[in-house]
Image (tube, rainbow, N blue to C red; front, side, top):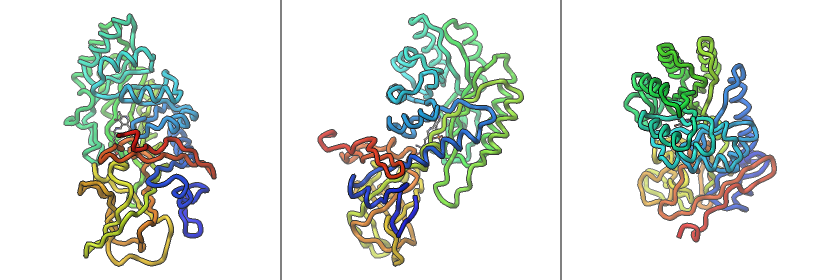
Length: 404
Ligand code: LLP
């Protein structure tokens, strides 16, 4: 995104033109940014050619997944719905991994029928259930087991997953039990050890620590894993204050790990692939003066973008048309929903705004639309994919008749 003659552009199209044609609020994704992210991600780990499975939960738009698939990526899914969507986007089942702590029998049966690469199980009970269903179907099923390495990812507590108090994965003693169980099972082929310590990680050290732990744990068993699935979690810079994740150091730590373990690495990135490609464009409905600050009441709300309300997450917010006049009071950008947490950001300094002006909320490609809801019976926004001077509607705006 950049300003040309004071107007904000996504690739070669000005946001006011987009808003005029498609209305607001609207999600816009930049194709060239997506391409750049995938190419960079691959480059960062090119020395060992991992299988990269896009975490569909971060963005479930079939057209987005289709574009990602064209670069050879697979998918990490966490529900039957996501698995169906990945298949609909044309992702080869041999590149799909299925994570999650509570897969139902129906979901397991479906995954088996679709012959996906791995079902990454998270408990002995789940593995027994996979075994039961596989036996009924007279099949041997490739599975992974998710280890909880008890590593602090140094990220927001709500999106940290690798500590022992989190519900994810199994501890090392349970893991050894599971390895024994699988050895004696004719219907299960334990191929993979998976870990995912959290999301929006900007410090490479938790990854280093996690790799050390995994290495120590697998050294203590004679089981040969074919895959190590390192999950996703690579963070992006939502603010200029965020320091970038040091991919070089993460890569070095993995190379070191691979010297001792001959395995294929799987990644499950979501945010690092799609996060910074998305912008939510919204129009100011009203401006309300409250004495010490002004409420900028937008036509977008927490149902369209939940992250600020749910995690106190910060998203850079930009004026679509630049002016030199500064506001006198702080601005609080809010939505129209009947909740005090329906608020995007409070900014002490901003340019002067007026009703009907457009606002761009940045870096919403991951966990933006995918976390959206119909709360307050608000229809979901349109999604657009922008490539140069072309715009493609990749999901239509919901209509009231769709939800009423
Ligand atoms: N693999 C597993 C098993 C996961 O649980 C997740 C994310 C990923 C991969 C992808 O992580 P990523 O590369 O996107 O960080 N809604 C939160 C993020 C929740 C992440 C959940 N798991 C947010 O908006 O920040």
